[in-house]
Length: 375
Ligand SMILES: CC(=O)SCCNC(=O)CCNC(=O)[C@H](O)C(C)(C)COP(=O)(O)OP(=O)(O)OC[C@H]1O[C@@H](n2cnc3c(N)ncnc32)[C@H](O)[C@@H]1OP(=O)(O)O
Ligand SMILES: O=C([O-])CC(=O)C(=O)O
Image 1: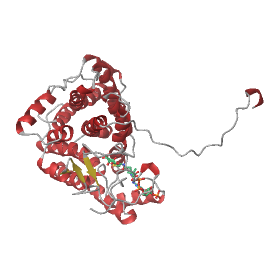
Image 2: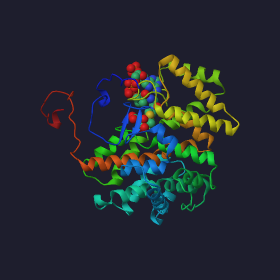
Image 3: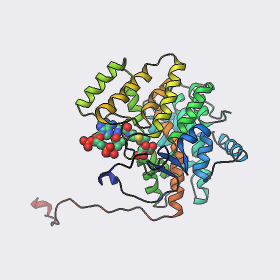
Image 4: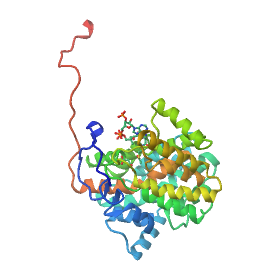
């Protein structure tokens, strides 16, 4: 790994805002580790449920622990009737991240965290329920069907695809979803996680912390970039067209979504992994246009700006090849990152001081109120 970027202070860049034992970004290994394990190693040798267990409970599970954890999560996929009724009232043209936010908040009304001793139970429930929440709303609002969210799929990724498409996914699609969830699970003090920690530092409840984090993840500078990347590449006809479109955008000084990173300097280790899976999906799909234009974008951005693809860019083509509607891309990120958010909330709670930085005042000098009649 190269050394971290030299960063100026805006956006709190380069300043340590606390300690964590959960992950390192841009420090060792390929550049991303979860509790000491390289994300590449985890992507090749573990499943998302094992990684979620690692992040939330501190160690990789034994086979018996994993079996029990998966059985538990499977048993938590059903949604309360009151939540289904709320989801049914949300219009089809709502952004799905708003559905996630409302779904999380509503679950907090129905199954509130009364005491921090319930934090792990609440987390496992959210982890199991998020795919059900988004797919129940999507299928009701778009297809008019009330789906049964309690599938027997062994893994969360396959369960999501099953609910979305009404049939069990192929082995390849189930595998790619699983790897994707591993890649998105945790990332130190990113904006949404920091939101969750700030909320936790007031001793607020888990649902509030996660609801706030969803709001932060929604923006195109953070999780929303995978959707924005899809919008960028979807109409590119071929490599030459990709270059022309991007050159035009660079000349207009547009931001190119899916490129650059606040911490990584010359690559995001998650990119190589999801890129490889996107290539495999393209081959299986028989139409590699989206993969090829994505590769052309990657080359041009490096050549012109020394900017590299972050985790989001090749996720766009990968998700598209699995027939996932673009507007559901960022909610999948939530289904994974809830593990990191919750682990950070627990870590914050275990050694808490309210997060309250100072500001440099740049407003007008002290002055007197002029009575309203004289203004
Ligand atoms: C999972 C995730 O959340 S990963 C991030 C997803 N977000 C995106 O893909 C959105 C596009 N990328 C960006 O907006 C930025 O790269 C961010 C938000 C990720 C990081 O922001 P910063 O830390 O401020 O970026 P950084 O300091 O590297 O910027 C350096 C310069 O490169 C430019 N730059 C950075 N990324 C891009 C980009 N994607 N397109 C065009 N220019 C860019 C910046 O505007 C800046 O130029 P300036 O000095 O003339 O203002
Ligand atoms: O770390 C960041 O700033 C954004 C990011 O890549 C993530 O949250 O996965």
